[in-house]
Length: 574
Image (tube, rainbow, N blue to C red; front, side, top):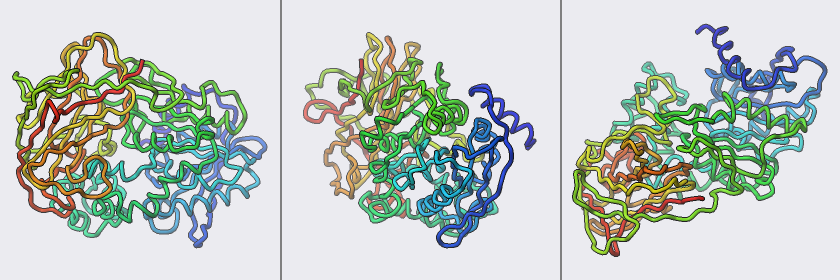
């Protein structure tokens, strides 16, 4: 890599979006900051030119390979009069200790802030910054801040870890297997990306780490072993603590996420759990972005440059407001949401905004594909539609929000975001339901719900729902998706007993969306039983998915009409 060229490219992207620099970078001082257990963490402080003390920005980072990128982007804070503190997390970079993802950040973060407030070069106005895991480091101390820490900028990290890893009992391989393999702390001879592409196919999956890496990955084994949200692993410890923290926060926050980021749902829930007082002084921004701030997929997103490259623009505006007392041009105490398909932003006082639920019912009909129509009227006659689900003939993920493996080269070619979808009838194990053309533009803002009446001839299985927008030109693009096993249906905290051939209702609530269905467009819903590797392939057996070796073929039935109607609920705003 040409380092000078790399830094120049980053600088050029950031500089064109922010005001002219007011300071030069005067220098860097290295500190070895001792934690309460005598472990020292490598800490670099960059100072602006002139006389201090300075308002200060703290960043705690576990990714040594990203340090150059972060410096190239975040050094612009220094050029605008801030001292910048960049610390390597325990067991990473030049810091001492053992890398154990997530479990040391509260203790180490509190110790670091306590060290920071004693430094004479900071002026008592401190903010924290950083995306993804760097935001996790913020969340974990956000209820225990000294008065000098005035604000946080949380970006692309949520507080509901269990619901980010599992949806109704189904594990998100693409996100958490890929992340675990890439951040295992081990040094396999084969690239983690190659191991990931092998590991997601291995049964029983619980032993994949040992076979591929030659050693267990303890934190990952906890993920795949604890399927129930009521398990001790989720009910206590760091993840329970993270879930409870937002309600205890006292400082204003800027929260940023994207409609195509895998932390979207958890970040929105974290925001909703803030106190009313904190929300009234904070701001939530959600745009058409992914985890890196890019706008992915095959649609166009005009007017989406609200936060700037690597969020520096948004961070600088917020810190100038919170730490220097400068005017802020955006409305606080509200949510700015980008409307996909409309190409514009809307400001909401609350989330989700007030909406009317439009219900469409699944109705079986004869046509070129297996499925039927979406009707505003509930069908009087009960019908059933059947298909076979073979776990070895899975449906490959095509687009979506809850995806991460794309971020690292070598982890496969699964595409994220809004993608062109297959034509109706492309597989015999996919049921397609399509609405009439919309007579006017309608904005769907909130959580779409699909309610299915289903049965199967095995003890457990899965059902998927993919909601799409069929444009007037006939092309389909995914809006959102979801999945549910039968045993863990409807967000149950523990495994339910399913009796083969019993008809049950399965509610699949997708993550939040903000999408305009234009006049002449249609809604399409595909129902099936797999979406791999976004989620693990269900083996059609009951029990812990990661410990299963064998699989079975399931005969699936979806019911429509009368007392066993299946439907979709769309939150429509004016």
